[in-house]
Length: 197
Length: 286
Image 1 (cartoon, helix red, strand yellow):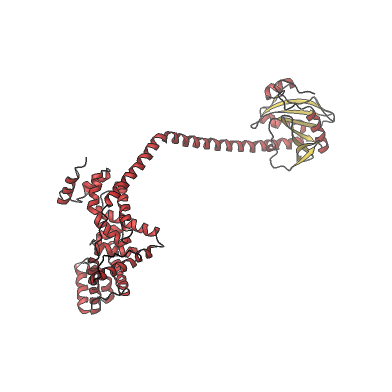
Image 2: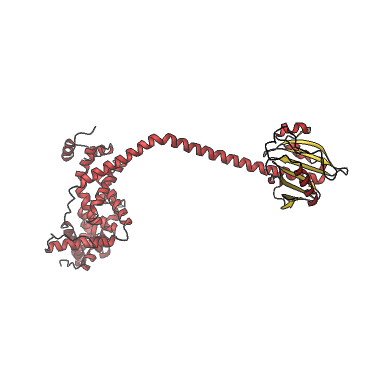
């Protein structure tokens, strides 16, 4: 029987559960189909997953995809064996969903980012303009390069965790990041970004 | 270290993922190379831009949307599970029945095809023997199909139908013997006729058409005495098959088409009608 949600949350926050992965009990609860555990898992990862999805598919489609990712997580969580960190497993699943989503909408994908709705309340300061430039330049990166850049620069994952998530060799991470950074810089310059000298 | 090697390691250096030795080598290169140092500085600017990206906010009702979807999924799954529990025995039984039927059908088909190949081969031997030794040709069929020599009045009981088998045929042929044969395709009667010169005719009577008996021998269909008749060439003689009343008749050993036509007319005139009067033991009108 799973402990009450509040206890689980406290246990998770205090890190008093299994040393290997503090989410172990929550994951076990989800594997039994416990709704409290599912809610806890959602609370634990939804912000990071949403941020990742926004960077990978854009603001417009990220909410639908987030819902889809969580349904897939709860559906497949029985297959999670605990060999990898749970977060790595979730990131991998989310990125696969993004790639599948992109394949399904391959024809409209490039246009999709270009058609991102403009926030009328957004400010137009220098910082806001740079944020917009970065989002546009990111959208122009190939999906695999975009994923690796976001996992490193936005999510702060180590090379080892990136390799586990994308299921590539650890030695490949550095060279892919080189490509991602170089191409991103080129796209930014094309969009009018002026690097500091 | 040259620029190319340094650039290859630039990301790993920037992210502090290099071994101490490599990190030192890259750092020493950067101190002497303003181009590579500039390249590295741009990585820092990209990082700064990435950290300043707007933090997206998750729609407030996201969990309730997921929650409802989970409910819908469970409902669908439960419905399937109930349907499965309810109908699976019937489904399994149906699948097993279909599989057993397929196996049985396949077995029957193979067996049927093998029987027909065997019959064609045996009948081929019979026709060859008929050419060489017509008065002994029936031995081929008797050995193979448990032929029983019976008096005409007992043939109906054994064959489960009343054979026509008249005592005489046109052109001086007289009945000499009557056999009942148990063939894989059917039970049939074989009546042997002979004339004074020793010419032999064999008359087979059976319930279904048996063209398989003749295998791939040349065959034509002709009208003999107003009746569609299948004619088969067997060296210097003819075999012929046609429907006569409720039965199919096959005659072996006819001299020519005229003789076939005469036999068709003669036997059809004596055939039992298709009406219910064709019961076992009842003789046809002569």
